[in-house]
Figure 1 (cartoon, helix red, strand yellow):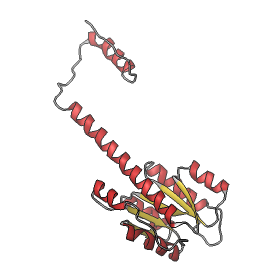
Figure 2 (cartoon, rainbow, N blue to C red; figure 1 turned 45 degrees about the vertical axis):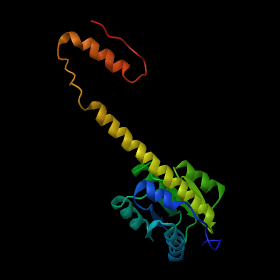
Figure 3 (cartoon, rainbow, N blue to C red; figure 1 turned 180 degrees about the vertical axis):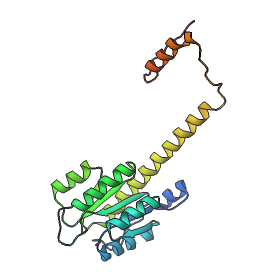
Figure 4 (spheres, rainbow, N blue to C red; figure 1 turned 120 degrees about the horizontal axis):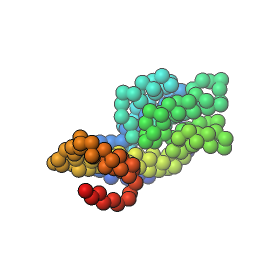
Amino acid sequence: MPTSAKPRETGIPAILTRSGHPPRILAADDQQHILEAIELLLKPQGYKVDVARSLEVARDSLTSVFYDAVLIDLNYTRDTTSGREGLDLLSEIVAFDSTLPVIVMTAWGNVELAVEAMRRGARDFIQKPWENERLLSILRTQVELHRALQQAERLAAENLLLSVQGRPEFIATATAMAPVLEAITRIAPSDANILITG
């Protein structure tokens, strides 16, 4: 349900260059025309788009495919406008992967619903009909942030591995070493400098 005809350049090629693969988005909505509009907007911008017309398909996709961001509708049953179904899905996604950006969208938006969605971990709230430029900007920002966080996690894991490699194994089985090990255990979580003599 876009409101502007032609989106301007979004900078997706820069994302592709840094990551090596196009951003993959999951769009979940019970209305086919909404999913088609999202695909028509995002695919020309370099995104891979998977669609889900039900909560079950969305859940299955999230457990089997890696996504850079998720767009979810809040209502999946024709007779409800409460947003409860989408909010529950949002909570499940955040519990599964708290770093995965989730943008919620609804035609039945209000301040209370938006606040509840953000409280549950949504990164942003889009009301239908959306503005193309705003949706593209939000997605670009969230994908870049998600990828930067993943890169930081990878680098931290690599640094930890490198810092452990090549070091002699710490052996302290003597009874006299017990107080030293206890002191190390107590002090290790802090940034304090200590000198152990003996």
